[in-house]
Length: 389
Image (cartoon, rainbow, N blue to C red; front, top):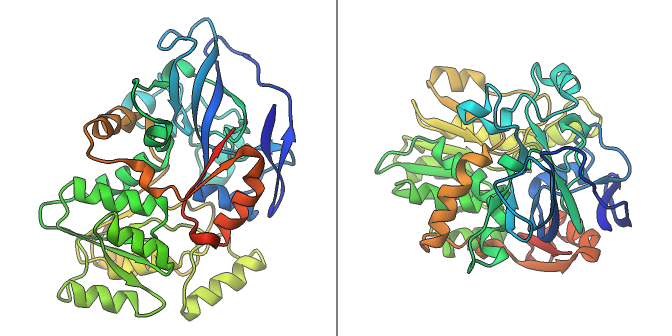
C-alpha cells in the first residue's frame, strides 16, 4: 500500500509499504477514505518530537471502512464506516474506567520509555513516534486499529466524511479545551491560536455558554475565519500588544478563561520569542512557550487556563508567580476522544456544527509532501489539509 512516511526533519515521502495485518483478536483493518494533516504533525515534521524512525507512517486523524476484523471485535461489522480516535485505549484499565481515555495504562508498548521522560506513560497514539507506542498512522491506504472493540465508532448513513472526520481529534480537542474552562453564562473566553483546534475551541466556547470569545493570532485568513465563521472578536498580535488589548476589552479585569491552542512552536514578537527560538535551536529548550506565558499573565484572577496545545518537554521562564498569586486553575492534556465522539456526533446530526468549515485544501495522498509544506509555511491561505487515499 501507499503511506506517508517520515524520513527526517522536513522530509516526508509517500512510500510503498507492506499492508497491515491482524495481529490480535481485538484488531481491525480499516480501508482509509479520508485522513488529514494535523498541527501536531508539524512537530514531527519539524523534528521536535524524539524517537521518530525513518519509515514511520504518519497521521492520527483518519476514518474509513472496516475490511477485516479480529474475532473479539463485535461492535462493528465489515463494511461499516467508522471514525478512529487518535488516542488508543484498552477500555478496561483504571483510567479508561474513569473516562480518562488518553491516559490508558495498557495501550503504549513503550510505556517505560515514556515514563522516563514524563514520570508515567500516557496512552499510545497513532503515528506519533515510538515514545507513544510506535503505531503506524493513518495517512495511508489502510491501517490496523488495536483495541478496535472500543476504538471504532460507527458513522450513521447520510453524513459525509468531511462532516465527521474531525471527530478523530481536533473537534473533541477544541471542545474539551472549552469544557476545561468551566464556562459560566456571561464569561469572556480568550483563545490563543486560530488554527483548526482554535477554531473549534471558539465554536465550542459559544456552545457551552460563553458571552464573548476573543481570538488571538497573526495570520489574516485565520483571524478572518475566526471572525466570520466563529463570530469571535479578533486581535492580531503583530499589530497590537495582545495583553494590553485584552485588558482594554475586558475593562481591566482580564478574560474569565484563556485557552492556549498553540503549544510548543509558538511565534511571537517580543524578546522572549527570540530567546525561545535561539534556545530551541541549540537544544537548550525543547518548546517555545510564548503563548503560554501570555495566557498566564492575561487571565483574570481566579480564572481558568486550558491548554490543548501540545507540549513535549521542558519549558523555560514560565510565570508561575502569576499563576499562583492569581489563583489560576490549569487543565491540560491529550484529549479523551472516546468520551466526546457520540455527543459531538449528535451535535453534528442536529446541525449545531458542521466541522468541515475549517477545510481549505483537499489533496490526494500522493500530494502529502506538498500538503505538509504549504501547511507549515501557511502558503495559499492553508488552514486545514484533507488527504484522499
